[in-house]
Image 1 (cartoon, rainbow, N blue to C red):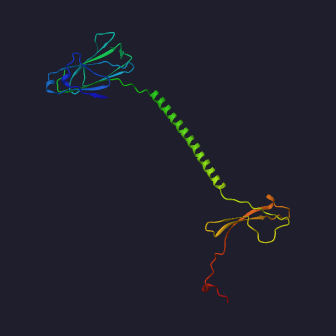
Image 2: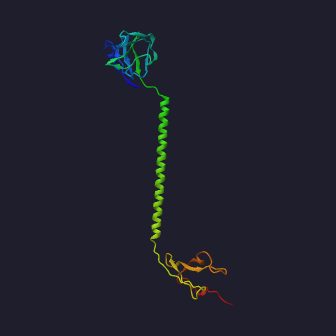
Image 3: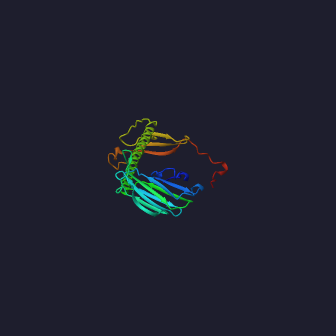
Length: 264
């Protein structure tokens, strides 16, 4: 609640008392030397929110009495609500169903008057009229559930978008790999197959892939599978590609003379 502290010397400046704004807590400190002659102080308040209850609260630091009256637009005379009440600590709620709050044609519908008397300074008085709307639990849970469901929908949509993006990146990586594989050097080789069996001489490789350093390579040969006495061995007519890791050139160093084995 907001606070306002008027000067005590201004208490009796208004003939109808001090106007209290709604939703403020006013503190009147009557402790100065010029306030010692005071024995009464008046306040008034006109609630402006027509659909909210008005909460009234007053606290006095010393003994004091209070009268509270109300005046409406339809009844200009003041009507007593509370009389000769100890205002050391007093609270009350004015229901909107029993009082017409608000302003019509620049005229307040209901005005409350508070008369505090029978006190001796020094003392302080805290007084307030507030109109805070009540928390509607049903509306709160409806709003909370709606926000929670909306958050779930947003999270699900973001998750779907992330899945689509991850799938797109995987496809892009696959395309890049396929392009890299397709861009590797290649060549064609023609192979003559004899009908009567293996030919004479040393077989020639159909592919030779050198390794890094040039000392080894992957050699691939085209071989014919055994037929087992039949015409051709399935599949593909009994042909297969055989690969092996081979050494290129003569890189084995001879053993030193003193380390050669002796023959007896």
